[in-house]
Length: 183
Image (tube, rainbow, N blue to C red; front, side, top):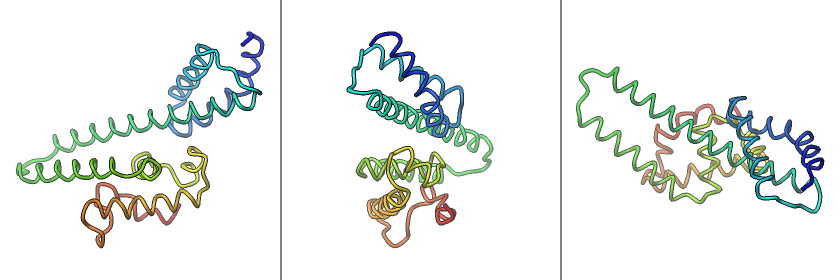
């Protein structure tokens, strides 16, 4: 790709990519890094598209996926930190209670992995990344209504996988369940 075409694409698309990445990651610094990385991949692979719009949509998908991965990684780090902090603050807790919590977390993780990708990603974005339905829809390129349906189905399947079809989703996943209707 000639240098001038690359500059034009960069100038036109970077603000869009930055907004997408910033919204998903919640960090301007991370968003900028992810956008730069996407353009680097585009340039490095010498991608060619029939028109600039196709290049723009490819870059948006790359940034969206990288941002979602970043957000997931940061959320896992935050949860691990919070668990460690809570464990430091606990006094007099039995080893049995801790073992039960670890087993429950493991069961939830395994059940999440069994969900189809399209259901797993919306549930993770809703419950762990604290995005609302509209933001999830924007990030995944689907309607807000479709997001709501997928979250509902994911919760139902997760409850069945965990052997609790009548009781809903366990506290670890359903922490924001009470606020889900407000989105």
